[in-house]
Length: 214
Image (cartoon, rainbow, N blue to C red):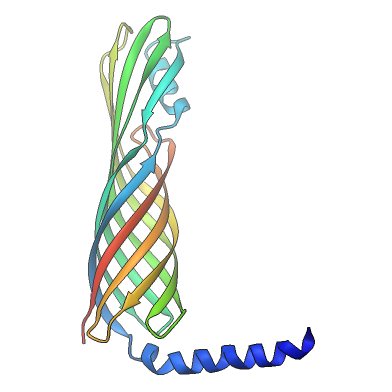
């Protein structure tokens, strides 16, 4: 097996060296827009705690969740090297609906809307001369609103808004033409607070179009 190790390493090195000239030019400012699908759920304990605050002893029974929504974002980034960039995003992660029954007998409907901004550190690695693998991690400042409508419960309709820090991480692939136009496909995981100050996990799957200023 060792006799194949040296040729394999040599081929890998040649590939990286061949890609380096093209990647060395992919620096500076770029911008873009993206959209796609999101999946997230409101934590059951968050709902139960909020309902129980006005009705001690109340418990949540069966729950139905519409955990899918849509996302949109705009971005502005700066690439310091061919492999390292900082990127600011303004995003809307969609609306997520939850409804269910309670004991004592009652029902509720909850809607959560999430939007905010993030600053990410991006690391890129060339797969070919034009394709790249992308990894990111960043801080999120999200504004989340959860509205709660109830029926048959001794509690008035409620809503909560939370503006707080969270975090995100993601992986993806990108392709860029010599003109500076590029495309990305990415998965990102967001960890943010809901409107009642409980943690909420949201996954987004997006396609983005980018333009790098020359």
